[in-house]
Length: 391
Image 1: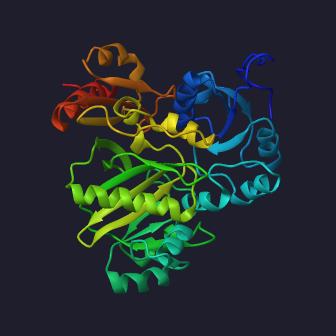
Image 2: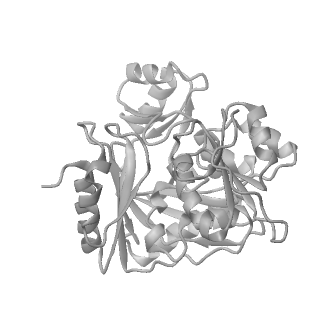
Image 3: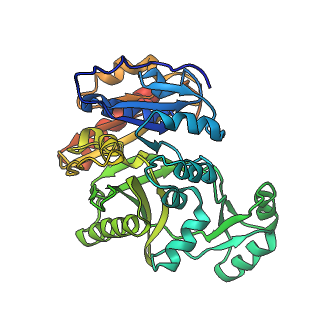
């Protein structure tokens, strides 16, 4: 571990002590948590991989260290009131060790495991009666072939741990392809049918330790190359489906006893609503809330981590659309076109301070409007400028 980066001044002995929230991770989610913590006068400390991580560049107090190292985690946890997260990839055994040491984690390691291990999530939620897709644990290619004999090729294989934005997921059509996917996975994979998906939805739910919850209106997410490309808030679905999605998300969060912020991703299929994945942290499907909701998901994350009263979740406009800004194929940096994008009326641009690379998520644009069409046109106009694809 290195010295503290961006240290806050010593707290005055005459003022109430500022709470300190520790976040494992220092990417763009922690960066936006930092922006939300400032007006609340909350000290936010991150465990960063290096001094150029997005949250460090935004001024977050940071310790540089390896989140795979238990002693690094223990040192980090000593100086914060609560430990929370911006990603899923911390060893569950290390989190249990921190809990055993007496540190407060939001969510707890038991709840966090539902987001860290897809197989655990499917098994436990399925046993509890929640709607999950058909699945099996495939250790070798013959397991996949037997599953496909019942549900048909192609099938979807998912690494139980570590995948995001399409990583660790593959659609396979033969036992040979299945074997190639399984070969590096010591614990096998989750195998599911290639579902007929009508649309994808997401609901953000915040929960405090006393069981108080606050859910945001359901949004629709549009995927491209296994990455969220556009989200529409509120989702253009009928009221009954919207209520079903929010109710399902809240029941899941209550069932697993999660605290903090949880994103519940859902599939709408001809057979009904099915659970896709959970994220125990702020999530790309909630970025619109910065401008579009009374309380952003990032402020809500800080409030929930501290067990403070949760904020209102209502939208402040009839419609909002968020478009992710993705690194162009030519390797150019969207920052070079920022001023032109800022000239688009109504476009709220967020860049993450990350090095430009083709296909990398570098920022997002949100626009509000009286309807989806208006908001979408504005958001895409600014995003296309940033990506260098504007006509």
